[in-house]
Image (cartoon, rainbow, N blue to C red; front, side):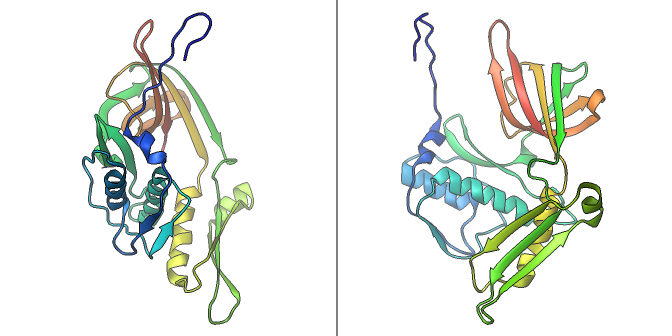
Length: 256
């Protein structure tokens, strides 16, 4: 685009732009996962696939997506995989990234994208902003309901953190499952996994740093800012590189 002052702005897209296409997207229970669906997208849309890991979490039942884009379906599976791989032994679960890496569509485990880079006090950062809130995706009660096929009555399971309820009050997440043959034990486990995911304050950290081309969304760096008690590895949610007058970057990071 161009304005009256003759400044021209060009937007360049990678292959993921084509993933915004809607289609009939079948998912095979017990077989399909993030990698297989991404490969199907590449085949359907004539995109070049790259590295795809073996993913343990599979779609539980057969389903067909009629009004979703390929990107939305894959992002949904990334979220489902994270929720269903959270355990007491591994409270962080398995995070994956979908990206176009130099012309190849790839799925990466975020644990494979750790950069040997420290950003913070006396290390490339020259500014920061920090916010912590319970007003965004914070839940200390998780309730799931379904209609029992035999009794014809609604059934519910839930998990909660009483200490968190005492401190913050009732912050409830609710979901209704349409599957009439739902497994109560599996849904109870899902409430525990969702509670592990959502039962903490949402922390937003933004860093202004000297530019480094290795930093892109999905990778992780070590954050070190004494004022806000940041001294751990964080995931880069978004990054904007600026090249004039010098190379700088603005990052939003997730503290897991």
